[in-house]
Image (tube, rainbow over all chains, first blue to last red):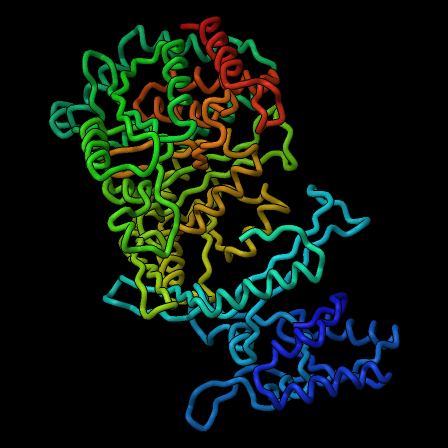
Length: 205
Length: 411
């Protein structure tokens, strides 16, 4: 999801990220609204733990910098649907689909039991197949490693995170890591196009 | 006393009798009282040597570890790449150290993967001798052309599975005089060695969809957790950290975590905590001094072990051992086949030499193990290092320095 310091993705890329054609119009509408000097609305998911505090900080900083962004705050805590299954509230899903961009705080996942990862659910719901993390050394903050400037792009929907697990017999558990050619090709294509766009010389798989 | 004699296994009785011999006591005391001729701080060296991770004679079975005519018999598998030249260095060093070890060499084809017949011979030899020193066994490159690969599974994993080497122990300690970004690291990585992601159970569901099965069993988790806590007691470590990803893989890593927590309750004197693997990796690169003994499943152990080795100087100075209930295989902590470095006097022998020192300790030759370790640390502290450690010496130069030290400080 969008990071404040990250370049606004190109129009073409945004089209690829959207899964339904009706959203294309909304996305382009949103972009042209920003280009025309209007305010862009962005979904804000504060999250758990320190999430609400840091989201507040972001809102204040953006307001002080007079950034033309309006926040649509939603809560993604799962609610019980009519069929008894826990789901992300429809309001949150509609909000992200409408605005096309969201900012998310940390969402905790209980260890060993409890509901499935909400981060994973969000990624699956909106088909966010590539996780992009730029890592750059900060000036004025010394660490043992100098001049770090790398970007990790991670396949975000499958693999070990498929969530397919079974207890075979008592004391034997099986977890399935699922890899598909479609997803691998998709994220690889994204990675190379990203590299070209950002002027990166090398891709390490 | 007579009843105890009947109950004690033959080997232990022999060792007990041996330790009472006057010449052995003299040997031990003379080594410890002699001042080292190196620039390493004595207490740092003592700390390094005292906390050696080798399980030692008491973990071995009665019938393992062949010994003929006073010489321990050890299987040596040079493997491919830089393996053969480093094994020659090991033989030279142990000769200079006058260790009572004979090597049974098992050659594998230099090019290409190990054949099933060679694999069978290797397994049989290790089962017979009980102890082995190993280079890297070449596996075929990963490929989707499964039909042509046939039964050629990853050889190193296959060896571990066949010999029942359920634990991998890797010691990563900062070495005095070796410049690294982090200081004062002393981590013992204990990794489950046979199950989890390394089952090599993979299949195509349909064209373009592959499933890889990760199987985790309670029995193996309990075995590795018990081993880890026993090792912690033996090496006088205070804290065990279990590493997992049980928030995503709730059943499999959840099982691992549950079992570790249960076993931890039987060892109330040892502090136990757990950490999720992504946070653990971040902590390792920012503050590695917080870790003492790390207990991990197979794949995370591989990755975290490599990170820890990289923090203290890299593949050249980490040593690892595969431990089973009946045998043990010692090797370089981080396996680098080094095809590019072969024959060019570039390979770093220190990792394998430290592994051979661990092997001597496992065989019960603690004095010889100390001398070999001291020799390696002396060479590193004295600046005789290969290129991967920031020095300019070649393999032969490093070997000569170590052999010289051993000959000057002979028993």
